[in-house]
Image 1 (cartoon, helix red, strand yellow):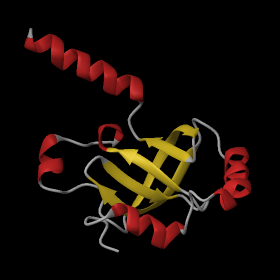
Image 2 (image 1 turned 90 degrees about the vertical axis):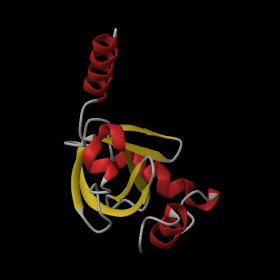
Image 3 (image 1 turned 180 degrees about the vertical axis):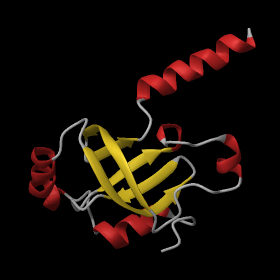
Length: 123
């Protein structure tokens, strides 16, 4: 898997047809197994311009958006030095809904606070 050309085909290779109605019982088991705020670890299986998809071992992909990655800075993003496919990560579950598992390494509230500080500094 390269993880850079088409992340969604990489996801299908790793997780099968995870969005199929046939997987509803599997998804419900995941919802019961995981909880928001829980720390998980996994492997990066695909990347997209907005973030990385992580296999946390539950049969469904988890997404870590770039703005919620720890120690992410502009230079790392531009140099394409973030979450290489195959790398291991630790993150916290931010949200579980609609067959999506959203992860964060930086608390969402902190991202909002820093964004507001940058905007305030411009004025």
